[in-house]
Length: 305
Image (cartoon, rainbow, N blue to C red; front, side, top):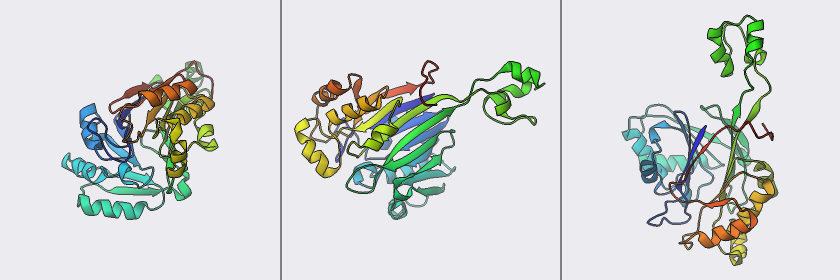
């Protein structure tokens, strides 16, 4: 089960009702944050995202509307008594950015573990058991889109466990995918079942690779900077997408849900953009600060594990 909360749905500059780019994921006691725009920590408090649980921060790129909230967030985590390390990952240039951030935030009681995705590609295993895969967005500067995957082990077979003489006390560990008592999970688990997949893609133009990686995703949280189709040339110039383009990509990829996000500050009411997206993908939803969703495993789906 993954709890998803949109902490910031805006671009360029914050509005009274809209913080800048940030998406929170929580699995059990582990928290993951995509981007950290201005207003992130206020939204986190407002919408119940515990920064104390944050162990990984993924930055898409280094424009201010995606990271100006980071110095204050780190200071707040320090004030909360955080001592466990926090991993910060992003495209090339991460070291210089974090050095500047730490100059502002001051000394911290926890380590920042840095992970750079060279060429905006690579994978990172998370403490929750999930994996994040980075791939290049099409933007004006190096920018990562991120595919989050939470795998799910195969179904536990008690008959196999009994036949092998495995004590019942060990079943729970094996079912969780952990070796126990000299036995291994593969001895008692069936084929891996479909996990959960979420794609966070902003700032970017639509691309064929993005559509392919989004295929069948449980949630696509997608750049929708421009509400009006007439702004498509501007979207190409600055490396963004229109709402209609986000809807078309979601339809092509066959995702389950689409959240529009990263609205231009000129978009004060997303309804027109939502209508444009829904003409392409009827299940599109307008993102807003505090929008939340619980993703759960679905045994009825037979697509990619």
